[in-house]
Image (cartoon, rainbow, N blue to C red; front, side, top):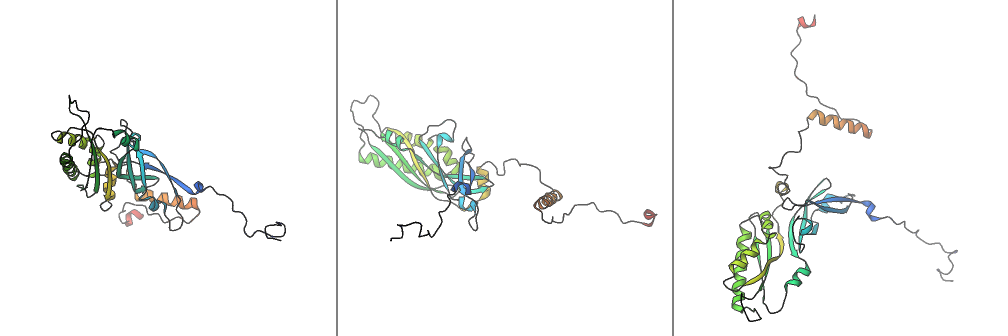
Length: 282
């Protein structure tokens, strides 16, 4: 008889494992956006609790979050996606920094039409604070005012000239500011407007956008700069008064008693007393 034929005579080797929900072993952390955005708390992210050598806060660093800009700004169109990277974990708060920007697919598809020329350019730029970013620009030709001709195609020489202008303006704008200032230029599309104005003499353009930004290289991590980016650096007000040494010792002693262990020795600061004389003794 085959082994699987009669279940009474043959015992199974391993007992069936009990199903455990994996989310019972996870903690939820708050995602905090930099101060350049209106809405700072963007949501929560789960991660497995610290176990052995795998520390939860260290595993969280480097995680990238993609969020629609409309969820981060009070007044903004919803066609931009912002990437934020976790750089530091404090308690249950994930402190993030800008990591990239992109357009949604439906926005990119809505820009492309017939009877026009699409012009694209990209450039790698190093910002003033040491970030290397790659910026992608997109633009479309349009008809002149009172133009009768249906099409608005640009010649190859005009396309090259416009592309050269795009690279020049993107390099100049990004290299003279830090990453925070660059993001503040990208959100209102200030660079796109400047490109459109500079190239109006070559060929009229419409829908000039910085459609994508990628952070290629980051400088050495600096906690002070990150805290300043989150509005908690040198300029921020202190959260409270400094705790005295004696108070810290009392807190430790109470915690030790609650845990059932021997409390540590508490050193209280006392004022020095003058030496005792014979008259004082009598």
